[in-house]
Image (cartoon, rainbow, N blue to C red; front, side, top):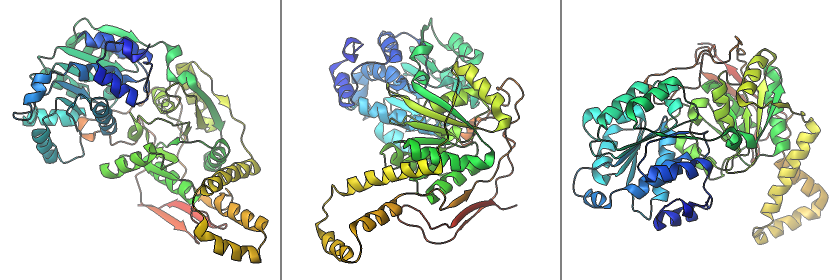
Length: 507
């Protein structure tokens, strides 16, 4: 169904067209008309199915223009509030609503933990938002301080409700909903519907319409799912060979802990890959800078923990590599849901140690789809992949102005053959996986206990999504890492047989 058939106004249709969208996704097609009618809605759909537009477009259309006009001269009259589990998802939602509501001149603001609350308070007074997006802990903090007022809120959105349950935010959410006692409409979205989520629906919603996206419409069906059975010490080299052969446009690599993310990132960079990592210990500014580079295609590989990547809405991810298998099957679904979006096929590869096969079987039962064993590429096949990428880079370089380099090129041709020069250039561009040895600190494999769902992490609201993943992973104390790198690296981080070792210092 086209967006023009859903009852949206011309300004929003113009914004949708500007964004390049024509047909609504199933969750949008079913939710938007209900929300425009003012009905409460419970929507069950996976991440990546277009939920932000499903609730955002009706909110933007229903904003009271008269109220909006007087906001510049009085305290902010918040007409809609959107609650998100993590700061990253809150920021992305605010950005998308701003883009969609540009022609409506919608004032959208975001508040989240980890940022200066005094600056947020000043911004709330100056910009008088009609739509407020935020994380539960920080929203509740503002409410207790009296810096936001929800008395005139018409619509409340609970996005990724099951994630907020997992993160220990349910009590905060209930408290926020009590502040919005005059709310006329509640929209709740969740990938799963555990009992605590259903209780919120019963307690705070009025005869909600239920929208469920059938399994065949979920993005996971567009993802080719593979597994690699390997020892802990083998995983990094195998992953590098797979990346070389598969040549992902944009790839996400998931590590279980913050230390793991740091080591994988540095190891990939040492091998010459354009990679960066995010986890809860990074500053907010650093995390957002990395995500911005990834979205803009200036990074090829993003390494992340589960929590740091929750709610990431990044288009164009072609491959997901689960360097560490998650012990929670739901986390697996969220991980691979970063690819296979907007009707495009994706690939996921999960590394499994012999002791973790039970977790893989539990995941297969949840997704109702078996992972296929992947054919492991040889070193020669990996080199072929590297050379293919190198040749593509050379072709890109040939498109530029080469005039000022011709004299030096001519001098080189006087001393070397053209064949030898091109071969040397390819050698410099290609990453020989045997050149730089990378050692990743081993971690104890997950000990499977049968149901695959034990040990789910719970966190209080003060954490604001700063953890490194779900469950009990038998972590050692975080320690300082000592990085040794001998020799010089080339432009893309390659060396000549030197070792890049990552070892763990004892506290």
